[in-house]
Length: 450
Image 1 (cartoon, one colour):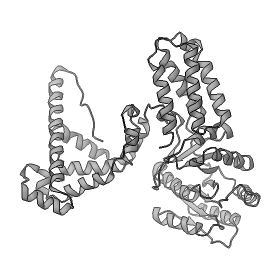
Image 2: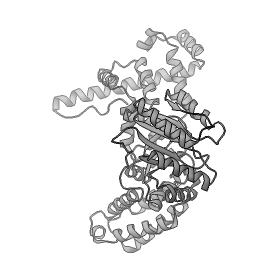
Image 3: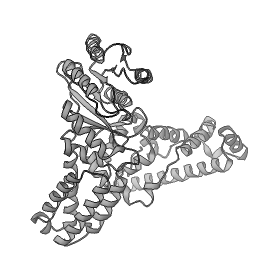
Image 4: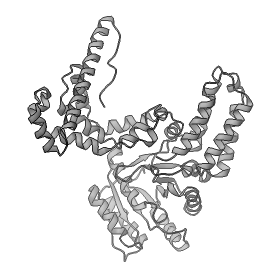
């Protein structure tokens, strides 16, 4: 994930000061030197680093820290607050027009992922906000750009407005809005032509589209991997078009994250969304406070909860909790749980959102093999209904049949059955603890299912 190097450096620096009973100005100076180096290494704009270090230093040597009972914790709080402020303070929500449709212009350089991001954003608007968007193919210059958007539209079952590559983008945008009004679409996302660099002719075309459509939002799509260049591109587009927001793509890659920390400060344009992967649902609203929390190793529980709420069936979860309480959990239930957890996204990314995950040795290098989960699912699906309900009836011939049916080994079947039995024993113990505690008037069931 992005920020990994920066996160490691900042967390190590903070760790040194965390437990200190007394903090001197010299301690603060030493810490800020480390913070400064960490930010510069992450490709954060030099002026942004200078201002950030100055603000934190001034607050860190103030009375609120030096007289505090826990000065180390106070400094961490200040770094967290200033980091949040640097990235925009609070989440910048997407506009909603009083007179639908809300028009969004998607702009950016070629290769930043503008067309794909348009599809992802339309998907997010439908799923998360229950809107009816329409995509508009207004990039008539790049070969296959229209085809790419139409393919995404089919994949998402999303309407795409196109007039081919012989009609001017301004006319395409005009007719698209007329059509969107007729068909009562809430949002119109105009996928405009990309450019290899900021080009005057194409920039004038964008200004014409802006003049005609009077968009509620102009989103610049930038590739976080390009670091400081992304900030320069944002500055240039902002000067000429007046951006309302930035969408950062490829923030899940091996990137130093400097763009995310610099863009808001340099352009005064908020980051609205971040792309965290290839899949069509891998776009999420940008929350500065959550990102600051992740960078400083404090986890991101709110995003984790939102993912769970969006992807998990509440009725099934309640039913499952009851089964856990009564220890009547079956292999079928286990299979269902695996399916629900997989919908939340890559497991290694989910783990990193947990508070304190940064302290788990080797977590950054952890590669959770999704194939292993597929193997477990294949083994359970090769069992009969009776075997799933009563795994104790398993004998060697049944195990051989299951192994052959799932393409796994008998040893893997045995391992899964043992793990399942251990899990059931643990649930029984917890239920026993709960019953005893109930009589004494305390103790709550220690966990809910995923």
